[in-house]
Image (tube, rainbow, N blue to C red; front, side):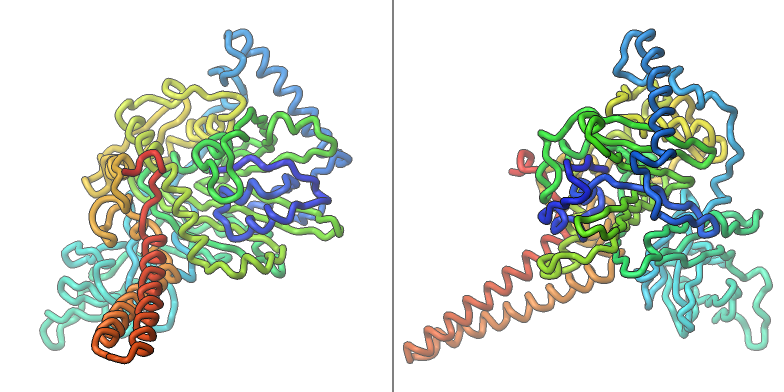
Length: 564
């Protein structure tokens, strides 16, 4: 869900795209930004300044362009020999012929949840691959993370409750606190000691820049240097709009989608002020870094490369599941502004993923944007993911059925799919350390297929997206990943409060409208009848507004040509 930048002079920023930019979903807002970009450091210990950008006069920029032309010449020769210069060939990019890299998925930090969204009064069940964990705040407000099962009879602790600051299993009332120690078993005889084995396994978590990260290994000690650090989020005046989305397809499919700029003009045509299908065009890609932990490079529209002083977009993927785009813009007054689009993707089971989207900047938003409530931009982000959900879930389903590497299924074009090929080739290198994966040239299927609630991959979402009925399957609160309420609202305190308060106001206004209508019928004086009827009209308008707000937050987007 990336978007090609519009033509823009760095010193003459169009005010309309800037107005549309700040709180929009990052995948769309990227189109409204000039493409002046510099990469960020990967860890706090390795921070560097962003003041030196890749300007045409910068020696680093000239060297990167020189290297890119050399790589392009080699790649073009290989493709021409193979008979199709537009398709990425099997033997292209010899860098990927390296041996496997040392990698273990457990020895990584995964983005678990936004800190501000952790519930204050209830436990929260989450997963990383097939590992189920429970997150909660204890009586001191400290966030704890346990394995999500009670040592007694394996009941889910996330189905329990918080009682006196302790996590209580609602099956038999066992209570746990601190480092997982059991402190109460109601069924024990008076004076009996709690068994030493009655404790819960804990996980190491860290709160960094508003995100809870979890270390999955119980063998290797946590490596704090692997926690990503995002320089722009630490800048004075930096503001961000962050949303969480649960999605019904594998995290590798999600990452493919997020690093694919070519689909945006088509799939997200006319979404707000940015994507337009007539802007679909050939793109260029320049890989400037490949490591065992990911890759990075520039990209942009092919037709923009000949522009004077053109600076392309910069993308970085870093293990295990972090994707980011950063831009540094100099406005007409010579002032620098910093923009970041950050995508934190967590594998949450076979055919499932959870995404934390964070988009922010140091630029003051136009006054008009302050008129829009926060929930408006959240529901707009939901709409963008729903536009892709049907075919991404079906893509996931086909991969599971075919059981072959992506090179036998995909036709990766040089002018649109380079990042996808790079990502799948990276998985070839580290796949031996993953629970399962689909690489460019190799695969490893799950040893144990997921149970029904975790699979089949994408079926529920695909079926729902193929139906004209709005809102997916079942009621608004039905726990299925095709439902916007389940995918986002339950993970967002702000949107949840908006939906609850709108329901309350709708009921109150409906009652008031009924009373006003009754009084209009009973009174005899004309002026009072008119007054009560006008009051009824205003109250019913309020009811309609509340209904619209509820629908905007809970109803799936359905394309016009698929509506009844």
